[in-house]
Length: 562
Image (cartoon, rainbow, N blue to C red):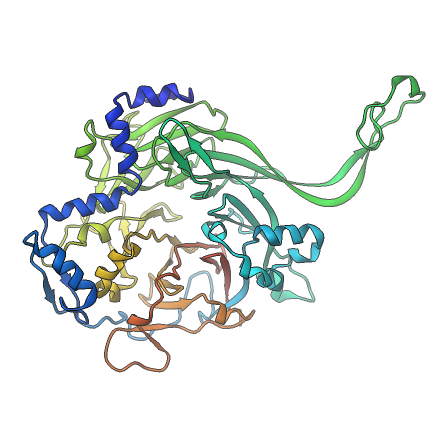
């Protein structure tokens, strides 16, 4: 294995010895994919498929004028109206017992802003989320946008990270005889600043404080441990409670100041006195200086002694007890950066086999690696790729085929991947094609031109399994999120919005109308708000409780109990 000794500056200089190469990397990875696909125009013709758009439309006209001088051909092709595989959305039926499949809003949590955090110190009642933080939505800023959501292994805690570098942990309300319905509600448990903005003087680059990923470790004692990462640094945090304080020191007074030994005439035995509950978050480990590029994934190994962190070109293996050294297990960086054709987009360990992991690429491929075969896993054990239909190839094919998320099923038998338009389920024993493909928002094929113009086509949607691997959930635009039942092949589209934020309100299925006459309960594809998007979701490990992040709002939905 390649070993990285973490000398802060020397290691990076040795790793990228040529100045020209460093400058190229710095420029390239600021927006790698977009530059790669834009350069691809020089060798590809542009094909726009759209039933409701034409070359004379405003968005396509700008493309046509710019492409004509490069002798590009602009064509339009008919695309049948989109419809759900089962017609109208149908309720889900899950193995975990979700009754009729109706989902109700348990609570809408607004991630505390700096203003609301100050008010929390003044009034402890503001820890109750359901209504208190809703008053502070006008103070939301770019830093308050949620960037990751993760349940712990029991589902009792739910952590969110935001673009401001903060981690907010919510705790599930304990069930009481008088208020049974409050069992699914979550309240603020702890809030702390995980990462601060930094500046890389060697490369003259700002390092954002945005939390890219959070991963929980299994609970071994009364304390909780979690990993959080920004673009460059991974931190291990310990979250613990303290409800007692020691009193009666001999050498210190009650205020903590040292006493004059001459005044001490008797010996006292210190005692523990009750105090108000205090939740403390302390950084136990800081894993830094190992990634030249932006970290996009972290995954805890099933041995619970190691974890891996993945950036655009490399994957490193860490031991939780060693912060100054990691092992490089995947390196796809070419000798000449101009030959770069793909980047790593996501990576995850197998849930049961500590030697196995997968990583996905911007080309839509998945590689399964076995660390027993080689220390440096440059050669994959299995390679998953679906052949592309030449008749469906267009300018956007490479962009929309890029995988934004990859997840093992809880059983470890299947892999789920999310690209721009679909969710696919792969069997580890079949590499040539997925066993299941679900269309998330196929009606957007006619909007790829405008989605490319406003950069939405580069959005990275996540996907999650339910506890029994029978249902899949992923996000979409207009604050829509989709659920697919693998057993019944039914699907449903639900909306997380402030208009439906009344507690215990039942969510109504939504449907998008592509063309023709629109029904009362349908929404036109032209009316979708692409600034409202569900990128991050999480599913309780054992119950039908889901968390959906929409900008700075966190929605908790629970399956209706009849």
